[in-house]
Length: 274
Image (cartoon, rainbow, N blue to C red):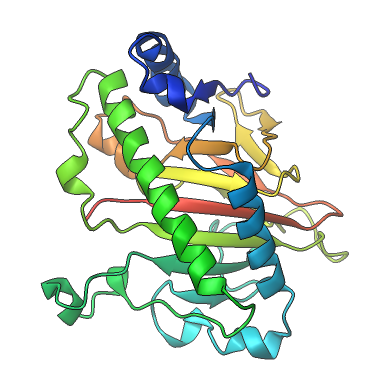
């Protein structure tokens, strides 16, 4: 256990000798807690650390460079999001984090590509650091693959067919976001957060991190507990859409980041259906 968050062995979920036991633990995480830490996935610690440092190099660029890919100009979640550009809790102040978003890339001949849907908007890419697009999109594909397999394991764990979600995530609205939390500002008060308390609106979130503590999850009694996990391990949580889709069996749980004297980078993959 990490705090009171279950640890799930990804490989064991697909091992016939261990799957039943691990799926029981997954079912508890999904139905009772809404969070879990997943380890032993095909994504290595080295891959995550390389991704994190690539994002770090971008976030440390001058603001003028980041402005060239500011998503505020596009009307879609593609590119850089400036500090205090997002407020996830209307009762709190705007979040002081910065973000970088990219999403699913449709084939040029896909009929949806001609419709101009914001959910499938073209990605924006900065000129620096070198190799940014290649690194991010390579991880995107890896994280999407892991997430699709997790959805199958979740379906099986709650008594549905393991392939239940397959045809619903062929062109997913899957958004990869990097969150950069700078050191908590000196001016920050009780209503200032890296990201304020919220539940995710979608289906499944696969979160990587640089290992710096910061994520907190709200328990049913209102206590907040920290979730510590190393690069190469992943926090998985479930959103409101999956809670509704499963008739309330799967739980969407509030979480937040207050921030500390250390900067922190986390990389959530928000996995939503076509």
